[in-house]
Image (cartoon, rainbow, N blue to C red; front, top):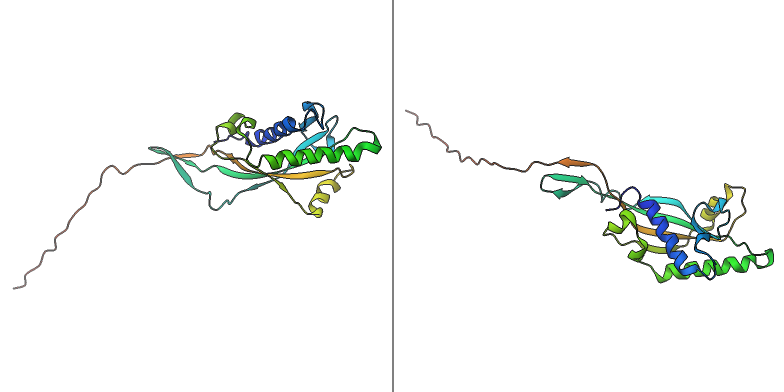
Length: 196
């Protein structure tokens, strides 16, 4: 199972997927694709940013599971993460939009070509997890996208939302269980009283 590091490992896996498929064209160097905020992109040409996280079906995943003969562990937390992928072109103004469209098209192509994230992109505790990580390009409504950008002084930049499901964080909570070792079964006989 994945540890508490699962979220950063998930973000890094998405970055590595994009680096493999977007370099050297349309982005020249792997280092120009980073896990960071789109508002502070610095020299990056593409940023990957976790902006929303939700628990999958919390009611069905509660309780404990047996991990050994006399030990139970609380079930892992299953999560779905929404990442904002944003293009930041460094081209001259007259070429900037076309450059960003190329980057976004390549990112969409890479994600659509790999709806189940290949194991080679998973590292750390996520590499040990049996859960399959799924990727999907989401269609957030315009209001949701505007809320992401309206809280800053930065102008809106071309972005897509990638939904990643299959992220789990293992619980450290355990409890001992006691097995039934003895059982007594009594068969009682009714006694009749005789009346004189």
